[in-house]
Length: 343
Image (cartoon, rainbow, N blue to C red; front, side):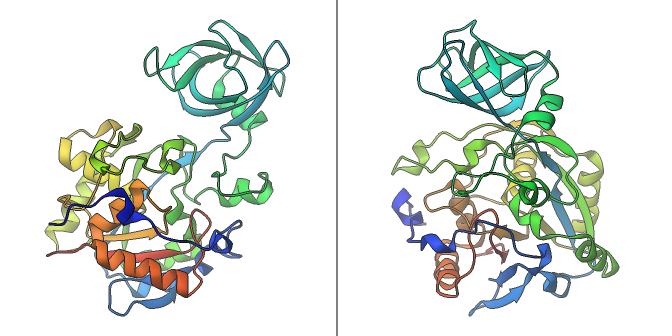
């Protein structure tokens, strides 16, 4: 098998194809059916006709929290926090954007009237993230005073549309700072039509971290260190997966976060915990048969994942087609349907 380097996953994307707003209707997004050659240009609401009775859709039910918070140091210097995860005792782990990093013990005054005390770094003393203790419950404070943590390539400030549309209709478990974007295309009508057609659904949870947007920087991709994300696979989902496989149905992962969760569980046997799974070409998929996914950033770990799943040459060809046909890219963009390569 060919050994891939970082440059293999690069491509030129016209900036105007980066979607800044969602489609008018969730299921009105375009869907590139990449299972055939040539691929077929479709609309997302056509999905029920592309799946079969007995298939099992696996969604990520994480809920995006309003994790972007603003404040200032005692000196008056402005800062921004992006809460990556909530720990115990009102403690959080956050990215900090500030001119000069404050020392441990500094009490930050946050917009909204609460305080955040810096208590250290994370995950170790030399970690890139910061541990802070909020003066009240972090989830309540984020809901009241936080902003939707839109990806760095979306240039407008968050508004009411983002609060509604940068969230899946079935979001349940708060903890993500980025949406599982392939699932943003599902609305209640589409879910009902799929159910009526005999397509089952189940959920896993992976709290997507800000690291999902970070490009790989090492030409030798094996040198890349993945960020940790928390996941859980409920027993009910495991039972549905086994029933589906036994009856000849397909496991259809909605988004790369669902893939990473399912394959983490399959490779370790752990139904919950932190995962740093890095899926690159040559990976042996044990669970997922079909993948619904948005279009991803050049040189990203997610480009590597979809290439591992459907085949490098096929995926790069689909991206060329999508650019030529003016598909919309990234979080608010369009999607494609892929089958796992079997050769």
